[in-house]
Image 1 (cartoon, rainbow, N blue to C red):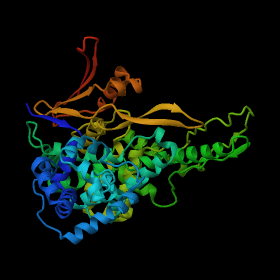
Image 2 (cartoon, one colour):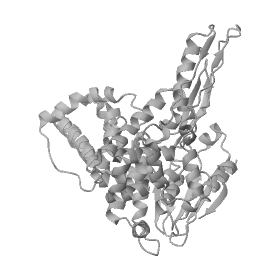
Image 3 (cartoon, rainbow, N blue to C red):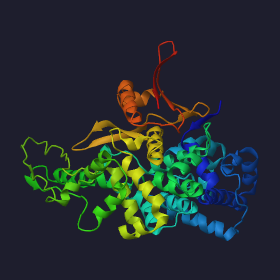
Image 4 (cartoon, one colour):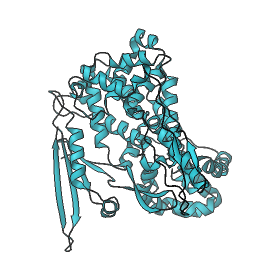
Length: 500
């Protein structure tokens, strides 16, 4: 049986082996360390190579470049590490946060943790914790042959948008999406190569969509995976701005009576938004069109932009100040539809998109992205009819590993202190029968978040039950397991099984 442990180390291995950007970064890192040790302490270098598992890091890419830099360039790079580290400080959520944890044992064996003082290195930078995420995503995307500047700009801007949300207190409502997007893209890329008995999945989707296989795998799928949640920050922006701004003011002026008009952010319909929306809707069911219109609050095209209710804050003089401010926006934005609109806007005008046959594949990607977040069952969720939407939704729901969940650990004045923990660090794929295992065995995480296995199972069943594999997608089994230990330290396993 072909078994794969899917986690962030697996994702890093996949990207590193296929991406020149990642492999070059790893190779330059090792060259820098080796050259610096060789200059300052040749004996330490010999010991480093002989006793430590240097190859364990290098073999992430089987085709590591052999190019050498002279000593002056290496020393110059080292001198700049501290500056780079500071520049990247506070750069939002780093895609390698969990990856570097899994690489920890390798790093320790390789003695990297002990050479920082000798080399005057910023080891956070060395281990990837402060790697410039936007540049990595940008470079990997370009390597896939994606050369539209608008799309590249969107991909490069995603970490910045997410960083803004994390710079506000909206993080208590927000789940990571930048790391998630790359995981979805990599897992989908891997599955497209698999043959489940009726031919390679890539070929089946290519036939159903009439999209060239190479373009689908190396270009359009990566756009689908990386951009499917790019509209999420906009959907949270009103909450982010209002929550952060108002609670800071309330904290600063606990005894002052205040009045506040919340800030609202929505879509403007003065330009060609409607035309872009019509491109997405073309050929879809009436039910899907209705959901898409609701997902962008399209009634604002006919009515006045919603006016938020004035908020009054009157202190009760009890010495405790104002209560925490919470806000629910009257504007409902579906991040899938917003993401699809972002994609189409990045390609050009509606007229240019309609007249250029090269954009047909991008329109199908936009449709898949627009459809992926609706909670009801649609005809478009049948694989034979909308294979890209089906595939994206399947991968999106499977990608549960490494996604931190905010847990309240203590309260302070006005604010809630949060700790982020992972319920799952990996999922297991049995490729022969296309079955997936999610094993919940982190007892601390489950206890902290009051994990309800039955509730989670019900939610996942509802999500997966939207999908219909039709006649051309293989049967899929998702097994959820809640694992506990009794007093005798014997495992007690509860299981829920979902079939698609």
